[in-house]
Length: 398
Image 1 (cartoon, rainbow, N blue to C red):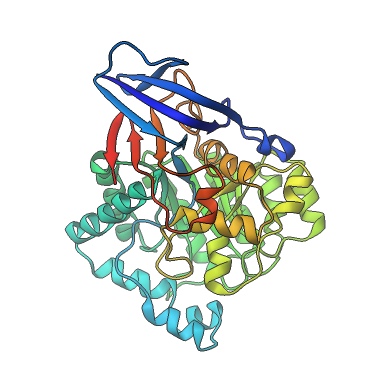
Image 2: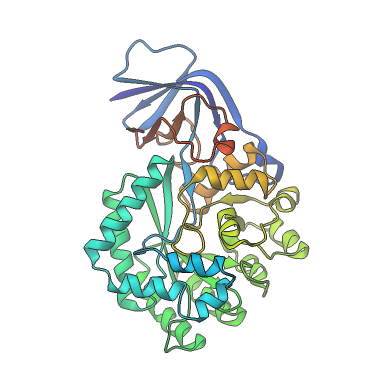
C-alpha cells in the first residue's frame, strides 16, 4: 500500500540521539511537502504530488507522533477521593500514609480480573492514540508482590499485541513499600524478583524520595538490577531532595524523572551527564506543587524529555496539549524545545529512536496530522486533537 501525506508544514527533529540544550530548539521545517509511505515506512519526500497513491491525506501541520515516556498504565479504577481530599488540604504524603494513594490502587488492581484489566487499559491506550500519542511507556508497581506484578506484565504483553500504539514495559515493583514489609526486606524481595522479570522488560524504575525508598536501598537495588542487565530509571526529587539525582548520574541511569525539588548543584551535575531529565508538569499542576526548572536545565545543556505521568492519583491526565501548554507557561520552554522533548528525546529514553521520534526516510510512518494549526497552536489550544494519526502506516481518523 502506498500512502501519501501532503503537509503544508512539517516540523521534526533529525537523527537518533537525544537533543541537548540549545539543540532542542533546532527543528527541521519543511513546507508544501509530500511524504511517501510504503509498507509502513517513510520512503521519500517529494516537492510535487506523485502520480499514484492508494491513499492521499492532507494537513496543515504534521509532527512526529508523541512519545509519552512515563505513564503508570496498567492500573484499574480511579482515585476520585484522593482528589477531593487533596483539594481539602491534605498532602500527597498524608493521603498515602493514611492508606490511600498508591495503596488504594494496589487494592483495586489485586481485586480486578485479568480480563477487566485488559479491557480497562486497552481503552486508555485508544484514548492516547486519539490525542496523538502513538507510543507510551507502561510501568508495573500497583501489584507490590510477585503474583500481581507478573499479572501487570501479562496485561502489558496483551496490550503490546492488541493496542493500536507501541507499549514499552518497565518494572517498578519499587513503587511503594507494601504493608507488612520494612524497606530493606522488601528491596531484598525485589532483588530476587528481578530474575522473574528480566525477559519481560529492559527497564527498572524506583521511587527514591521521602516516604518511599531511601538512598541506601535505592543504590543497592539499582546496582543489583544493573548487574542483571537492566537499564535504570529513577523517580527523583518529586517530593523532596534526598540525593536521588546524584545516584541517577553516578549509576548512569537512562533518566531521572520529576525533578520538582532539584537544586542548582544537581542541575549542573545532571546537565553534564548522559542522564535525561524527564519532566511532567501535569503532576505539578495536579498536586499544586512547584514546577521543574526546565529553563535552567536546558540553558545548562541538559537533555529534557516530557511525559504525562498518567496515573490515577497524582496525574490523571491523557492530554498532550495540556502537558505542552504547561511546559510553555510554567517550564519556560519554547514550542520547538517542547516538540523535541515530546518526540525524539522521549523516544531516546525508551530506546526506540532508531525507528520512532522523527519523521525521516527509513523510519516508521508514525506521525500526527492537524488541520487549521501550526506548531504553536497545539500548545495554545488545550484539547486540540489531530485530524489523522498515522501509526505503522495505518490511518486513524478523528
